[in-house]
Length: 468
Image: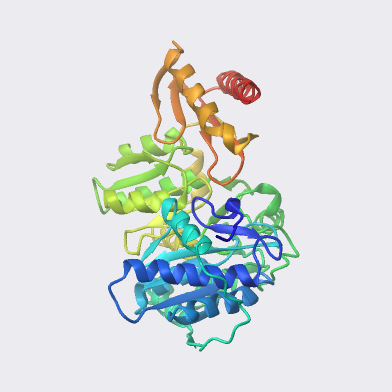
């Protein structure tokens, strides 16, 4: 049995460092293993999957080896080429394919790469990714350099994706007073797809770092971190633009900057979308992750919706969304999932268009809208290093503590523990992607926020140190 680095098979995807724990042989073997996985669960004799890749320097080499592994197991490959992750997802719903692979490491540094696997129309996560790993470990040795009959067909899915968006939002061209925007693609693979769509819809767009470049020469491609969007913030404020929109490296996450240069957080953006959907669909279910502000859940309820709090993680949210038949869901990190008028996956380009639609049609000043939300004080997502072997025990002990604390009103243990106190709440959970414990706090005063965060940071650190 071959030995594989378990750490790169994560909860939601497979991700590692090129030529360190991901190389040509690994990619070939993964292609073989994924092929065996989909053949196991499919009843069809002839299977085809779509494969796209991001702008990283290693992506084309990985594609070549992955496709060879798939072909070795008699799986046909449609090469989508350089695309954003949501465009690869789009192919699952608009092409006759049996699954797909997106080669990407999202917003990780340039030396990383990875794989997002889909069977039928669903992305694999959790035990299903582990099953692919188990298949991979059981493979017989085959050199990736071996000659294989190639069955790879190139297809321009971007053309179809663009046509879909123009059909959905084309009516916006008739509006004369549209908001001018800044689009920061971070040299990822979303800007060169989104900018032409926005131009065809007659939006005035100031593009920043639109050209895909896997070295990410201008800033790290994560638009939810203030340090990465200084150029966008400066351009928005100095140029009097109405809004700035940023994408992460593979364009499945969105970050939004308002005209005063402040960031619109992911849960605030989710509430804006929820209110718009609930004007037409009273009673609709809206899902937010455990890190989201209480303002979101209260706001959804006030707007006539049914708020649902769920586990963090885009694949987990997506699965819950399907189970609940929810119209919208999202995360603090900028993953926004629309089932209303769309396919239910996270697409930052589509989210951009929905945002601009609201601003154009409803004439909402988003800065004014944000400033009228209930005032709360909160921490960012905080991470305390914790070895993976200790994480479950640490969280379990924090849950036990919360059950005994007389100041805690109630607790929710769907993902770690989220507890309420008078005037605020806190969250302690294990990270699914890093050796860390994740914490977040919110309160109606700075004093309560400081008390909550200091108390539980101290408790978590003590628990980590107490574990052998």
